[in-house]
Image (cartoon, rainbow, N blue to C red; front, side):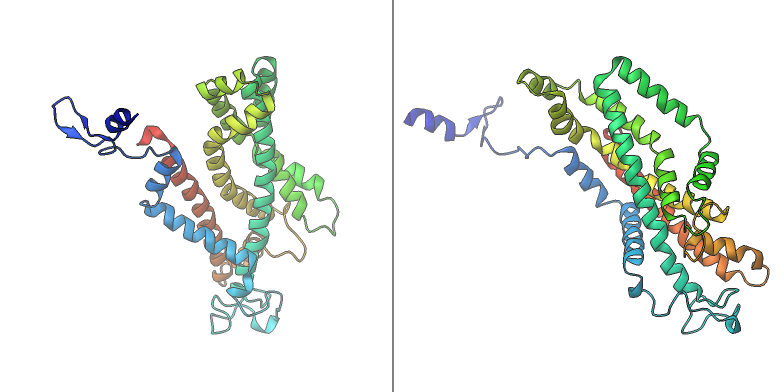
Length: 312
């Protein structure tokens, strides 16, 4: 036993005859997530997008941290007044504080996008995993269903569905827009998940787990999903920004949020007829909307590049 221990603890000679310690020159192997994080923390695009996303999330969750005036306090006597210490962006055609309404408008836009993306993510996850894992006629049937939904113009489908769901004139349209976006934007995530599952299910660790008696449910949840989720998460991150822009578009067209709701789309729609008198009520919500959408898309692109081994 002592001879074995002495050989184990001794220095191991190399091919050149130079003794080297067994642990020298060997680094602990890193996972794909570790490599991705090393790339992300050196990427200024990732940090810029992450800071913008955090600011938008804080703005939507705690608007009182960024403003002190009431976004619903309007007075026609202040119509189209310029910026001041109480209103950094001036006032709109109703005499409302443009800055306060712009900050508060982030809440509806972000909440709708989060709910819609969650719905789209759940549908895409279920459809994509089922199609990729079972294959055969299940894959053929679900894949054709995805193609049918992709063949429908997104904006046209959103207008028709949102108008149908928000037929009540007293309804703010919040849930109608959220459900509409969730039901029509799941296809890209489903296709990405399907491809990832097809690639992951043929790996050796899945075959080993199957030989040990793991059933389809355990294989998909415990073994395939953790290794196939990275591209899917990237798609959902980008989809958050796309849904914010789509919500603003629907609201601008009059089939999204309505009534007393406050959002960037409503602010842009209401300020457009008065742009020749003053552009501030139109410009600032548009700037906030563009920066938010750009931040989510940049964040998703940075994460995708970090997790893509072909770009290393």
